Amino acid sequence: MAEEDLLPLSIAARRTYARFFPYHAFDESGAGRTLDTVALALSALVPIYKRENRDSQIEKVSEQELAAGQFGKGATRMDFADGRPAIEFLAIKRADLDVALKTLERSILPDPMASRAAGGARPPEA
Image 1 (cartoon, rainbow, N blue to C red):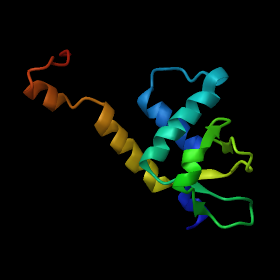
Image 2 (cartoon, helix red, strand yellow):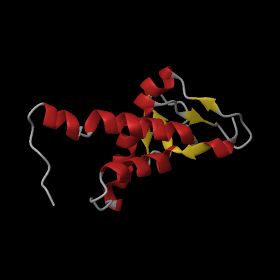
Image 3 (tube, rainbow, N blue to C red):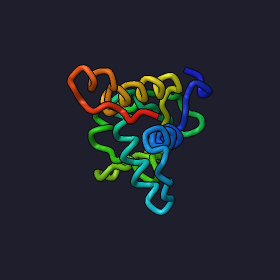
């Protein structure tokens, strides 16, 4: 897999936040924890990749690492309570971000047609 196929996880988390909260100003003071939480949601939907250092191969973060680790510093690293070294290069495939966004949209945004079919409220008319 080529590095240009990847997007740093912190950027993917920021794009995801912007997609679902377009009218909320991004609070830089609490941004780190917010992006860590968004990264956790992304990790449930698509593979996360890592590289130990600049010379190492890119590989998938294992399920065991995901279970034991915690995203930190604005989704720029994964820390471990057991003392193992943090993973400092985290990324997702660019194409996977689109998949994750579509999955999240389907699961959290209402379907206006389904709402109408169920007798739900209609959107206001212009």
